[in-house]
Amino acid sequence: MQEKEKGRRDFMGMALGACAAVGGVGALYAAKRTWDPLPSVKAAGFTTIDLSGAQENVLVVEKWRGKPIFVLKKSEDMQADDRDIVIGTARYHVSIGLCTHLGCIPAYEKEQHKFKCACHGGEFDASGHQIFGPPPSPLEIPPFKIDGTKLVLGETGPEYQKMLDAGLTV
Amino acid sequence: MAHFEKAKNLNEWLDQRLAINTLKRVLNTEYWIPKDINFLWAMGMVLAATFGILVLSGIFLLMYYKPDTNLAFDSVNYTIMSEVGYGWLWRHIHGVGASIVFLIIYIHMFTGIYYGSYKKGRELIWLSGMALFVAFSAEAFSGYMLPWGQMSYWAGMVITNLFSGGSLEAYGLVEWIRGDYVPGDAFLTRFFMLHVFLIPLVIIGLIVLHFGTLRIPHVNNQEGAEIDFKEAADLWKSGKKKESKVIPFSPVFLSKDVFVMGVYFILFFYLVFYNFNFAMDPVNFDPADGLKTPAHIYPEWYFLWSYEILRPFGKDAGLIAFGIAQLALFFLPFIDRSPNVAPAHKRGLFQVWFWVLLVDMIVLTAMGKLPPTDPTFAWIGLVSAWTFLALGPILFIITMFEKKIEKGA
Ligand code: FES
Image (tube, rainbow over all chains, first blue to last red; front, side):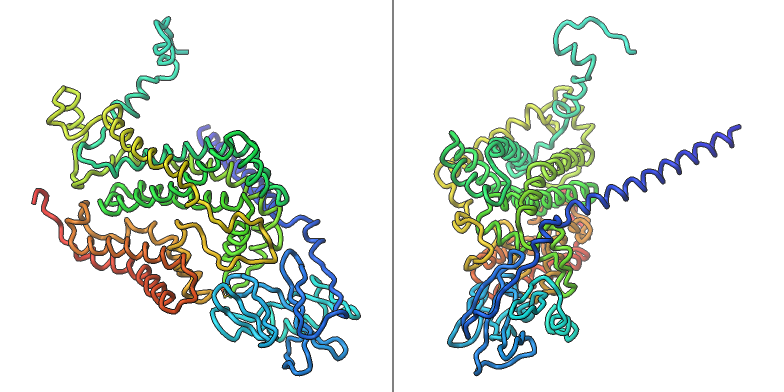
């Protein structure tokens, strides 16, 4: 009698525990998903930039996912780099315009062909490599796909995949 | 059901149903406080009062604030500041309160360290207090976002970037926290929720816990003397008030608390009315702009010391150092091996350690505010960051050799 009673209580306890665990995990998952970016936010995560109008050595700042995007058409005398996006004969430097140190926006210095971050004096060359100061890594290249003379940001094209594989950006 | 007599007055009526007389006794008239404590022990009540003022002023701000990236800036800087009657008053009280509360927290914390109030038996007081410090930090940070000015935006950007985990590149986590690729609407509304509901709730719970942890080990005293509270309380109750080492919390000790609070609130309202600007960053009076960074980004003064510990190191080492700095103080009761519960000035090397810690944190704070371009200052920053990190192990070693102080010596 008493044994039976105890067995019944144990069973109730375990059943309660199992239900609570399932419910708890479910609730946590729902809570996690609630904090995910909304579909509308994600859908707005693509931007198309037309490169045909770019002028040499003039920095254009576009906006993608709320972040500034640097587009710089390189002139003949500027050094070529593996990170350049080549369309036809033109070479472009495209990167997310946030310093890899603490996220300030560097300014472009035309004559010296370099980006200078006023925050802590970090410097990047025209290909986005860090050449001075605290920044730990080169300016990041956003995922892109080449579409004629246009660049679709937010989509991973073969050229971008190649850069990723070669470890040229993260 | 229990038996109820007809009550003669409201007090009796309530007492029969809620036992309010017992409650009063336990929490007030027979909650014993050592006589030998100075004004620094009033900081707890000062903090409680300041928290109350922050809640009240917050309620009034909440009535006109709009958690929307397009409206937030104007709802604070235009609607509340110039349209709402006395809106400026609530904002200044809230702003000054948010800043000054940290000054009092730091005083409260360093008082605890100086007098060894975190030691054996009182570990939970210290731990719950540190948890409160963390909760207040989260509360302050989330509140700082709400006016959606330039500093709000960029502080949000930089601080959430910390969660990218250095070389681990955990960008998914950062985007999950923000609900967007950059701080945006989703970010603002969730920080609004945290600031006005969830974190305050946690803070209130922790305050109750913090008070609860005091009940059994009792509050420490200036000499760190062990008091037989039962014996001392009996003396007091039998009328031998002079001989007793304790006084009841209410009304006797509370009157001292109230006096200290009175002095404090003179300072507080002087700041609110004549010097509110110290708590307001001028950069935050520009609306948030994701395509333009302020010349240099720094947090409010009370976070500067830990920000400075992050800064002189590289990305990963900086994150680790920063993490250690956040957690180090939690472990104080377990790092300090000394058997003495005594004020620092009686503990030899510990006193030196205490002042080095205090000065180091002040130096870190000063360096954190300066633009880090000057090499001399960067160097001072690095040295003081290392000093902070080294102080933990040093404490462990020096207190291991600390001799037991003979009482009465
Ligand atoms: S953020 Fe650019 S150098 Fe620090």
